[in-house]
Structure formats: structure tokens, C-alpha cells
Amino acid sequence: MNSEKILFTIEDAAKILNLKISRLRTAVFRKEIGYVKLSGLVRFTKENLEEWIKRSQVNAG
Image (cartoon, rainbow, N blue to C red; front, side, top):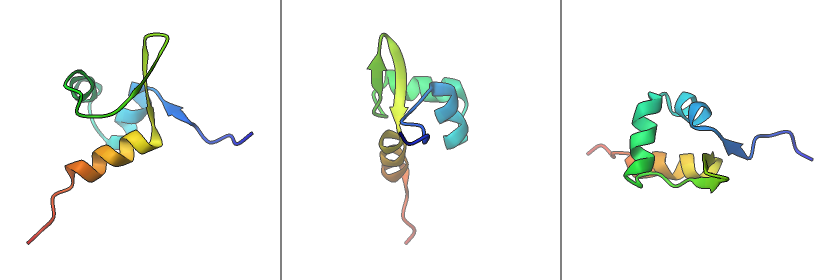
């Protein structure tokens, strides 16, 4: 089995995105970012994070 992480905690995701945990929690509450809920715990896939980054991108010009 691959040792690469499949799901990230909110703390992991905040570090990856260079955000405060509170900002990421707000994004979850507002449904601005996709997530997985397992046994009541919020987790993120790599794709969730990448998609949010793409939607947040502002193009110059």
C-alpha cells in the first residue's frame, strides 16, 4: 500500500494551504471547500485542496 496520505486533517490542510485553522473552519462552515466527513470528523482529500486553490486563483490582465 502507498504510504502517501489520502486524507488530511484540518490542521494538516491549514499548514499545506498556509492558512489559520480558524479560516479553514470558516471555509468548511460556509461550504467554500469540499471535504469528507468520517465519524463526524472533517477530512480533506488532495483534490479538495487543489480544487479550492484553483477556484481562488485570480488571473492577471
